[in-house]
Image 1 (cartoon, rainbow, N blue to C red):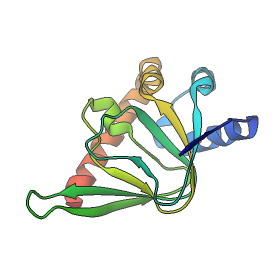
Image 2 (cartoon, rainbow, N blue to C red; image 1 turned 45 degrees about the vertical axis):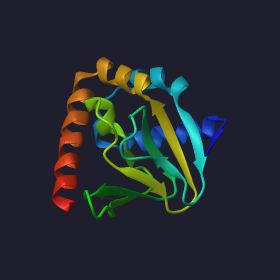
Image 3 (cartoon, rainbow, N blue to C red; image 1 turned 90 degrees about the vertical axis):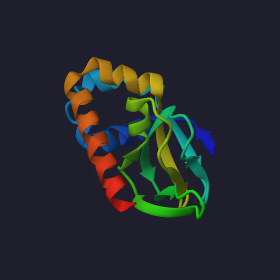
Length: 153
């Protein structure tokens, strides 16, 4: 993983990614502009682990380029990893542990080189506090994802 300098072009693509994430649609441009200075961009190589199941959630991730596998390890005696989803450009992950204060419930690994936008927990929380509609959408989406994950186990 390597942090990259964000250029105007990258911020423009960040805005495009945000506009394709359902719960960001309720935010005004002014609200999003307040968060832009805090957005980071990271380059990941194939097989890099972005986040691990059981770790504390400290960031929200939005994929600019590349694909990741989302997997869950389950079982006591016979531990196994199960890929529950593959995500690509304009998709996101990491919101569930940020809004629940629980540890990460999945491991995310790059299946090809990736460019991923990252927002820290503090900045993500700021976005939640600035817009009740955004907050409602995030909680609704996290609940839906939690149900989907439980059904795939």
